[in-house]
Amino acid sequence: MNKTTERTTTIWPALRYRDAPAAIRFLVEAFGFEEVVSYPGNDESTISHAELRWPAGGGVMLGSGREDSVIADLPPGTGSIYVVTQDPDALYERARNAGARVVRELHDEDYGSREFTARDPEGVYWSFGTYAGA
Image 1 (cartoon, rainbow, N blue to C red):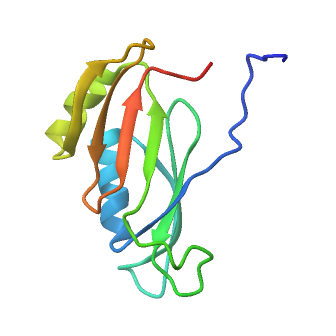
Image 2 (cartoon, rainbow, N blue to C red):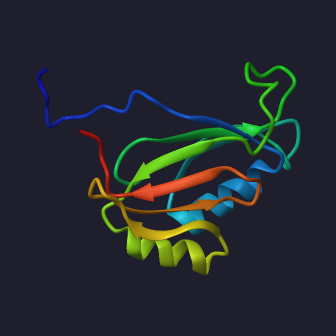
């Protein structure tokens, strides 16, 4: 298998939230995502579509629960995302200071990763670690 040093993001997890504007604020403040776009729904309390980028590459798409969504039967606040970070210690402190609920403390894995897991206010699990894949 040929490995290249250039990577293109081709996977974008999509999440539904009861309060998407609050989820965006939390993910930006607690974890350091960057809000790229956010399109309102029927009113300012809902988000039709938002894209949050991870500074090192990739990101997530999210929005408010909608009846016409392909994932309408997926309960809001459901999911588990792993995000690669070069500085899990600093991110851990940032997340804790922003009120993230840490469910697995910062630790070293047998396979060499340093990581932790937190839940956002609606229940999505966010794991951050140094393991970037084989």
